[in-house]
Length: 475
Image (cartoon, rainbow, N blue to C red; front, side):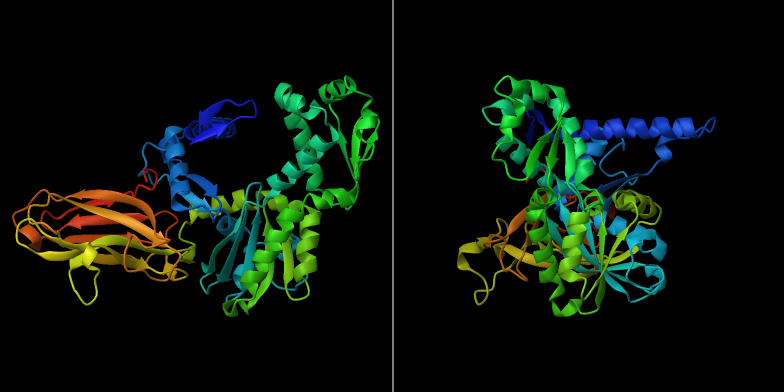
C-alpha cells in the first residue's frame, strides 16, 4: 500500500508507520535514559504496547506488528515483547479504577466501577480517525467481559478537520487555498493544530482562528481579504483572525455525531443490552463539548454519560495497565464467524458433486473446499480458552499441510467459496515423515480470545510443535 502526501509524492505505508514508530521509540528510550540517571537498563527487557482501534481487522493489527519489527521495537514477528492493545479496552481499564472525582461529569453516586461487579457500560472511544464502540461488564474478580462485538467507523475528529478545511477552501476560492496547501504545508499544519485545540474546547462560544502570514499574502494578491468573507455564512474576518460562529462549528460535527448516535442506538436497543447504565466517552475527541452535548441530548434521560478528566490520555494510561496485566480482559465477543478450509469424505446426500475429488494413491473419494467453523459470530470467547482440532492428510505421501483461514458475517457456511466468505490468511505446516501415510495426525490449537490469532500445530508423528503466525498480509 502506498500513501500519498499532499504534494502528490508517495511512500509505502509500511515505511511511514515504521519510521513514525522508530521516532517514538527513540524518544521514549532517551526520556527513560534521562529520567533514570545512572540506572542501567536493558532494551531487551522492555515490553512495548501499541494501541489500535477495536474495529481494525486482523490484517491491520498484524501490519502494526510488522511495522514495529521494522522499527526495531522487537526482533521478530513472534516476539512477546510487543502487546497489541485495543483502544476501548485500554480506556476501560483506566476508567474502571477511577473514583467519581476522576470524571468531568458524574450524574451517579457509584463508587469505582471495578468495585461494582455486574455493572455494564458502553465505551465510546472518540479518536482522530475512528470512533470505536464496545460494551463491557465488570466481573467479580475485577476482570472485564466484552458483551458486544466492536462497532464504529471512520467518524473521528479528523472528519471535523476535513469539514473545516473544506469550509476554508470555499472561502479562499480563486485557487488561493489550493496554492496555500501546496506551497506552505507546515504553516497549514499549524493552523489545523490551532483548530484542533478549538474544536475540543469545553466552552460553547465562537472560535477565533489565527490566519497565518502566507495565507493572508496569497489572498491579498487576488483582492482585499475581507472580500473573501462576503456572503460567507458563519465566518467573519476580524483583524488577522477568522471568527467562526459556534453554530457553524457545530455543523462540522454533524457527520460524526449522526453516525455515532445512530450506532449507539442500534446497540442499546438489543435485548442483551437492557442492563447497561453508563456511556463512557474517552479519547481526545471526547474533550469536545459539542460531541458530549450531542451524546447527552440523545441518551442522558436513560443513561449516565461519563467522561474522564484528560480524556485524551485515558487510552495511553490504560495501555500501561494492559501491558502489566494483559489477561485482565476475561473474554471477548467474536466479530465474525471464523473457520478453515478442510477436505471430508464425500457424502452424495450432503456434498456438492462439483467439489468431488479422488486421491491419487488409493482412490479415496473426498469433498474439497468445506468450511469448518471454529468460532461463531457474536460468540463469547474466553481469553484462556484453547480450541483443539485434529486433522489427517488427504494424500499418503503428503509432506506438508496447508491451513487456509476464512471468515464470514454469516452464522454458518458450508463451503469456503460462498458469497460473503473472505480469505484471511494461510500457513503451511511441514509433515516430513510419511511412514504412516494417511494415518498421521495433526493437532491444531488456536486461541481466539486474543487480540491477535495464535495457533500451534503439532505433527504427532514427530511430536514436534511449532507456533503459527497466521499471515493476514499476503492475501
